[in-house]
Length: 263
Ligand SMILES: O=C[C@H](O)COP(=O)(O)O
Image 1 (cartoon, rainbow, N blue to C red):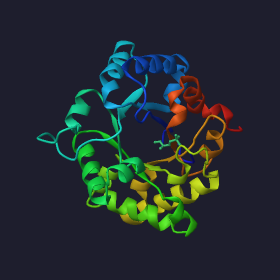
Image 2 (cartoon, rainbow, N blue to C red):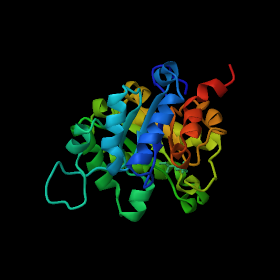
Image 3 (cartoon, rainbow, N blue to C red):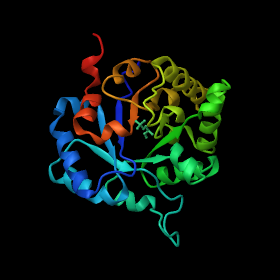
Image 4 (cartoon, helix red, strand yellow):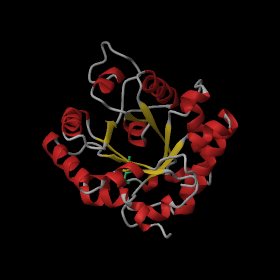
C-alpha cells in the first residue's frame, strides 16, 4: 500500500451465500460498524449474488450508506437470448460500480478461459463498471514455481486490446487458488511477489503512469488477524475477501486495518 494515490479497497465477495433479507441485515450492520472517516479512507464494497442487488441498492440509497456494491460476474453481451445470464447494462442500472471477472471458481466450474475473461473485462468497461479481474495459480503451478509467469499470462490475456486509459479503470485481484477458502493464506511476501510482478507487467505493457494508478488486491483466506500484514506490502492495495465478508463485524474489522498497522 505504498502509494498515496491508490485508495485502499476492501471488497467482500459473498459468493453464493445470503438471501435478500440477510443481505439487508449485513449491509446495515456493516455500515453501522464503520465511521464516515473510516469509510472515506478505505473504500468498502460488497459483491452479493444477483438476487440481493436490488435490496442492497435500496439499503445504500435509502440510508445514504457510504458502501459500494457490485456483482460477481456479467455476460460479455449487452442483451439477447442468453438464458440465465445477466448483462452489464442491467448491473449499471442497479447502481453497481464493480463486477468480478475471471474468478477462479468461474474459470473452474464454468470453463472460462482468457478470451471470455477478456470479453467480460471489455463489456464491464463499456457499461461503466469497474472490473475486478482475478488472476491466480493452482497448487500444482505453485509447486512447479511457475506462479509468476502463470499470473502474468492470465493478466496479458484478460487485458489484451485495452488502452492504457481503460486499464486505469481495472482492479486486479491476485488470488492463489490453493489459498481460497482453505484457511491457508499466502504469506505477505508471497502476496507481494505476485502483486509486484503484476505491476511490473503493467508497466511493461501500458507504461508507468498507468501501472501506478491500478489497484491490486490480494485474496485468499483474508481475515481481521492477517489483513494488516498483507496490506503493509507495497504493491497490495486491498483485499478480495470471501468467507470473512459474510460476518459484518469481521469484515468491518478488516476494513479498519489501518488501525492495526504500526505507526
Ligand atoms: O473472492 C474471494 C476469494 O475467493 C477468497 O475467498 P476466501 O476469503 O473465502 O478464501
